[in-house]
Picture (cartoon, rainbow, N blue to C red):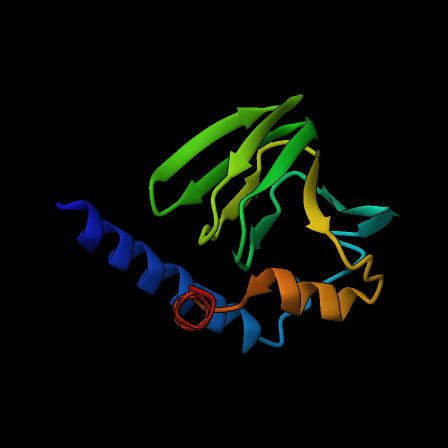
Length: 149
C-alpha cells in the first residue's frame, strides 16, 4: 500500500473511532480532562507544558497538532499509533513531533505523558491555547495550513 493511501486509511479509521467515542454516553469514555486522564498545566515565559497521567489500559485519541513540538514520556510504556504506524515507547524518552501529527495512545502501564509547546503570547486560557495549537480533525488542519502559508 502506498504511503498516501495508508495515511488516508489511518485518518478515516481514527476519525471514525473518535466520532464513535465522542458520541458515546459510556462512563468509560472521557472527553477532555477527567479523573481517568487528569491533566496538569504549567506555564513559563513563552512555554506551555501539558502533563497527562494515563492509567494502564487507557486509550487516548489526540488532536492534530498545528506545529512541531516536543513530547516526553516521563514514565511508563505507551503504544502510539500515527499515520506512520505504531511504535512502543518506554519512559523516560522524548520525541520531536512534526506538525500535522495526530496520535492514538494506548497505555500499556500507568504512564506520565508530557507535551511542551511554544506559547509566545503567554496565553493561560486552556481553551484558547488548544484552539491555537490543535485541530480536532485533519480537514481543519488542512484549512489551517492553507490559511497560514
